Amino acid sequence: MPEASKFNSDWKAIQDQVALLFGLQDDWDGEGTLAPASALVEGAIRLTQKLQAIGELAPDRVHPSVNSTIYFEWHAPQEYREIEVVSPNEAECRIFHKGSNTTEAKKMVLPFLGATLGESVILG
Image 1 (cartoon, rainbow, N blue to C red):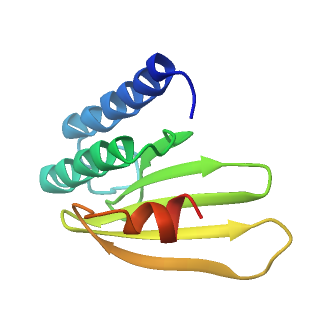
Image 2 (cartoon, rainbow, N blue to C red):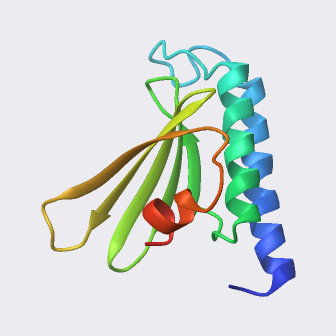
């Protein structure tokens, strides 16, 4: 795990980015896409708090999607991981391994309980 102050500041930056989504307006992309609902943004904030609490590194990127969901992305040399918050109480995690044509996928309930997320989905 990185130094505690960097770890916390990385998560603070991500949480600030998620909080900005409360102000996102419909048609934010010029294509008529609906903004994520406030309840979905709240679920995404709970997700960041849980991931930080279990020691997961902050994602490299967070962004709204054209499906009115919120994506968190981690980019690593051997894999790409994403969590898509699809409802205030549900998320989907996908892991793509370099050189493989298979994808690991799992549906999760928010807020996550115990270490299940870290053991089976994120920290692998």
